Image (cartoon, one colour):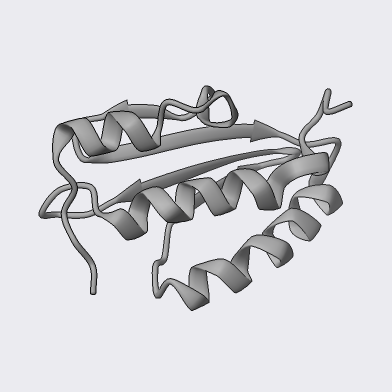
Length: 101
């Protein structure tokens, strides 16, 4: 069951080093990822879409060439599922991120 997170829970779950590129604006989480090129973005999305289906979430995705922006939001507040999807996007993007070692 999806649960709206308290402010402190959001801060705790988004505080890890791997989440430093995510930006929060109220009930919205955003992450812009620069990939090597457009085909790389497509491969990244193929990996991430599995988690979006499992979590029953549909993030807003904006693609401009090799750059993709993810926007996660919920009308009632950020939920445990929103934050979990942000973590899974970060893991799924992994080596597709430009500049990744």
